[in-house]
View 1 (cartoon, helix red, strand yellow):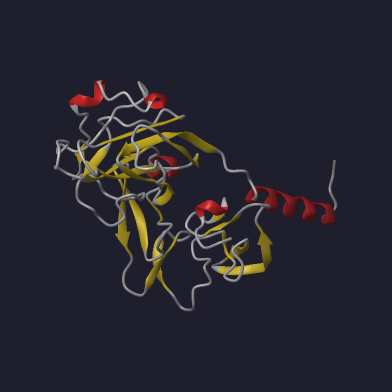
View 2 (cartoon, one colour):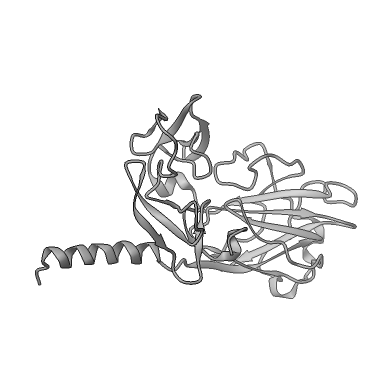
Length: 270
């Protein structure tokens, strides 16, 4: 079947719209910690609701393209622990990296955790069987200071998808800051800074000088509508083009992920 010019334009428009409104698949599971938990996926806080009760899990639902899961746990009294299991097989074990010291961007893609120690599976792992829903599915983990009054707040993370392996390129954009970029070195994504007064331009794989105000389109195919969080613009050559388009019903535009998302993941957007 041959399409005339008008039909071809309609077809291309529908492909673009449907592609932008693709339903995001999710990874589900459960997590808890003794005592107060904050659960992150690629730096975004997804849940911190386990009612300070390590005996029950918090349901977890995160995008299927998540690359880093991270959990902060505050231990109020007694011994501490973190436990998590996801439907894709990701679980807490000794391959996680943990630290008792806070560092900026510790829960994001590209953070260098090489200096962090591997998680410890404390001896109480075999007897601390609750929550029942996670029993046998994952290990309780902590830092080496798992005894009472030692390392009362810990930060643990796990890279579940390597961006260098996924993208198969040497350099690529850092989604949270246009003045930075990733450089892959032996399959490790290392965060680098552009020179002062420059920003990363993915099409040229280099940092370039900014000659005019940022439209939000640098290194992006779509960008948020600054006046309406339920809409977004298409980009071309670093500029917004056409009229704003609406996210699918019930979703809003997530600036951090540069796509339409559930409202609960976009604070401040009704």
